[in-house]
Length: 317
Image (cartoon, rainbow, N blue to C red; front, top):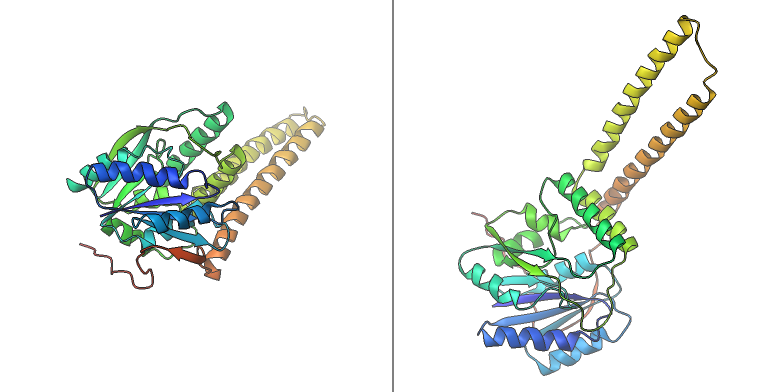
């Protein structure tokens, strides 16, 4: 059986559409399935729609958060309660084409343990959003040393991969990077981002920037290393400028140098503040991990779900 994890935030118009569309595709292919909708503290009638679908369709289950915790916790909440032999994570708005689930499933039957959905076309996006997304993926690729330029949350994971991810105790999780990091036998399928049939995108350029900063600092120490390299670069520049100043002094060609001093102060203060900001982000991540609070709080569930309190022991071979 395949479990489909569908995080949902203010997606009341898409719950029934997703249930019917995915159900028809998998039933036609005679694939046993389970749909797990995770309501990430929606403010509309998303949870009511999930409950209605769960009453009508035994394939549907639902998880309701006590408040909005974010997409990453929602995905892991679904993975922790999924009963399938493999799991597919995809968007509730169906911008990830549901027909690709069948292709992923067939590749899983051939022995692949991670089937990555790779974006062939990003669909209709604004120029600013496309630039911000491209910049983020370049940064995360360099920071993690993993090619994530066309990565997405749309992927199939074998049960052993799901168990390995669920066993990780960290609070600040980055699903796309962790699914790369765990390894296992991988392949990919290409897809084109589909247009929404209802509702509006919850992502903006501002939210994407925040998403990038949270995930880069939670998964990679590259920004901290960047601080050290900036300090070394500024030290070298200061030594060169110091030698130049001494030469002018001893040769009798010393100038007032007011502009130079001001520029040096501005640059050095800017670098110091930037460095303190980066260090502060890592300190905040450490603080959050030390507190040990749960990734999310579930207020209600519907349908047949696996008990996360008694998960099977991950098999490592």
